[in-house]
Length: 428
Image 1: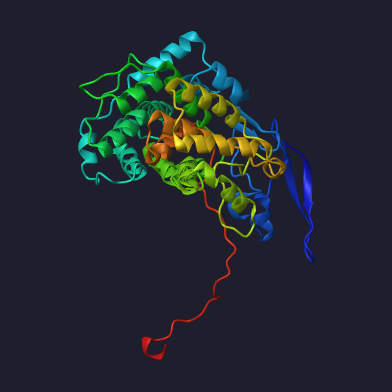
Image 2: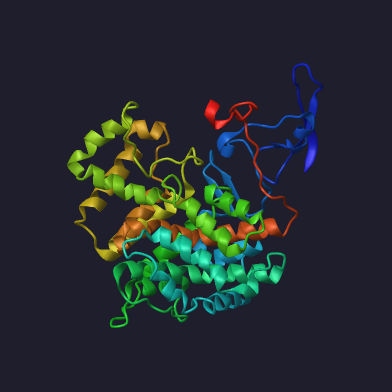
């Protein structure tokens, strides 16, 4: 809503009036769309000060450590809800009642299987291929199997595509893991919850079906909830940008997976384990803490602080509690890497250097520890992030398509050569 205006004073030119928009919460936003009429546009690398869209899905206040999904605090959703309820909320704007939840869960479960021919697609990948490389391929390939739901202008097609993606991502993620392990792929079980089913497909085999620990299933469910959406991050913006071209939903989510693969985005919890490997032993902590404090040393503590959250990461508090529950359930007491992680956690929470700079352990720090404790290899961490974030991606994709939108087309500040003539080859 525009209720007042800003005025841009440009030397030697007439002032430019720009509307100021206000959302339901958050800072005021200057609408610069009319600026092009003056022959100018803005320059904002990394989109640090630019809103690329209007959204009603997720709100973040990094200074206050607030993360809301459709108005609900993430801490309350993690405590009182489950992942599929959170999916329903992100997709539809409200939490489901009992009847709506039962119907939604049933619909998701009816779509957990993937086409049998998709199995043969895996054989084209090397066994040692990175799981994210395979995920990019197989998710994009889904569009070859579901021609019946690719009309992005049809609301029903958008809905069924959303359900299919949410339902099939755990199946595909587990298939990627089983392929890398050389084990038979496990079919989903619709008598299990979403998180239980994922752990079943990951760790059970046809010759041995073990019961799923409720503690580990709850931990997995919380990881899914805490990674479900995070506003206009790099991968979500990528999905929206791809979607603005009219690309099918499976291609858009594959684009999001590719963006998430970057170590600065989805690879952060994987980087935490790599850092712990580099430190090696508790006896080396003091040396590496000193390196982290030295501004001339390139070493950085991974999993501490956050680009958005300048106070604390609200997801990390829930993840820390979940981490303690998982380690207690598994009785892990002598794992050197986990011991090292817990010691770093203690130091960061008490050392004035880290406290003054808000370098607190974030969600990636704890989720990496939990996933390792459960037995999930480091290379699968970002795949699980993609699994959880799919609902956020598809919610933003649906929101964009349900309103008037334009194809994304950023401008640039050109600093190359001015026009020049091509000389004949002999005279160059």
